[in-house]
Image (cartoon, rainbow, N blue to C red; front, side, top):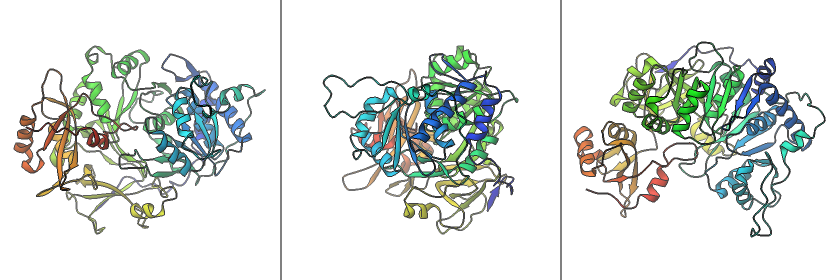
Length: 538
């Protein structure tokens, strides 16, 4: 059975490039605050508009245009937004290099996408130099987004030069030029790499036209007033998409370089934030912060979450604390936004007590299929398949991998296990490949995580498989204790056994201070496997 929500036959219309309507929105009200940095510095819409055009002129002089790749190594700062818009205005594609990945991995990504220009955040100069040390000589031109500290006196003589300052070059222009859009609708505006939890990330190609349509029509909730969005996670991930959406809607974006729950809560109250995006692990940290009860949250109209499985019990807690402002989002780089769960959907539960990820977005079709590709009826679990204008054209220069997820019938295999109910709501069970194969059957980690999150001693957890010396797999759990609680591994094993059966009981429980996250904010189960070598067995 398939489900669709208002397929739009005119979905091929719209601007050639998402930057055009965004720049038009900036030009309509040049005096409005567009971006506020963490230190309180305000960039007006007019100033951002001018910077984009100045950057585009400088980059065009250096040969950046259609078919070229600009790689961005930067934290959350206004200049990286302007640089991305400038590169895309010229028709170039951009690649986000996730801060927190090893320099050699970043170098392999930059090299694989044929980077013509690497733009570097001055605060990341050490990472940039290490990255360049892994690239072939003169593989890419380098520019910085501001002045860079000189290398330390004891640095090697061949320490990489990070090149000229793009901001200084822009300031040197005698006037702000009017740079026309050179992008075509079918051009890739970016190659977005997966989070890297299963090895070297795959490069997902994302075309201009579908992205332009998405940001034009998606901003959860609100009363029609201009949004005030707090970007407290990386602009290289979904915070960047919501930033584009907010600016195109005439709103303001407040940037934080890192996620700090107390700072986020203080900013919500001070800046009257209306929109917030968080991955579930960060939502839990917000719920657990001691400053939450005294924070004025009255301005919030939308907290959007997604990106990895969420605990039903913690979502119910969030709904009680924050009110009817929770919007679940299910999407992926290969298909953009797929479903949205509205606040009222959080009272509806499905298999195992899971909260739905919502119904299909307009123009999106969903199907649940078995391993042979046959459609399954409502209520049966299978792999989620998606068809929409936002589905990727494939992975960058990896046709074999592309063929695995794009079988050629217009549908994308998501790799997620899900089930649809009679009203078209989708419930996610787990990843197809995220299985722990134990003696006696298969364990979906999300099922154990959902259960453990209901235990009063558990604030946060991650469940993962560990191979033994004889190549069998065991269930392991990393657990962050709830405040004023001690974790008893024996008690947790008994709890899981009682509610799920001995098959699901963790062979080891590791008590940790926090769950490590990947550069895009998902639980880093590879790191947990590598670091939790001493099992806390009962």
